[in-house]
Image 1: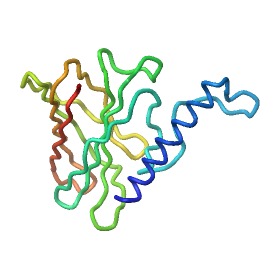
Image 2: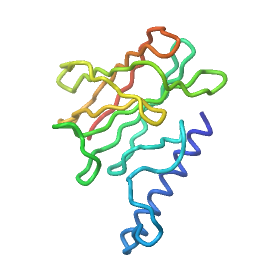
Image 3: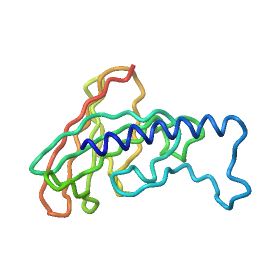
Length: 167
């Protein structure tokens, strides 16, 4: 867990530095790389996360030997094409408690309850680059709760709960 925190901190600092360099006119021309909007890395390093708005760390929750680490990313204009009406990308990574092995196979979905107390339909979280991800809509300020249901590679059903207050 500490290594993930250290990596995320360095990733955010790196992205901030990269944004400053690009704002000064830097680009990817001349060295054969096309800007992709995804930081390099693998597995728990958040490979493939969309560039764009702020990354919001929600929490780490453990259920039946699996740690779930959830994040939200604000989908600002200019980020990858979100689903219609989506305001945030919800992503969650899973790892085995004890040995830290990332769990990347299985199924996951999230149900979002808004500040008005209404719970939406389940949104399938698609596995990509070590995380399960899906676009969601958080349209009004207030407290949101996220219940993630999973059936991972061990075929055991689990639930993980997270909250976030949108200002």
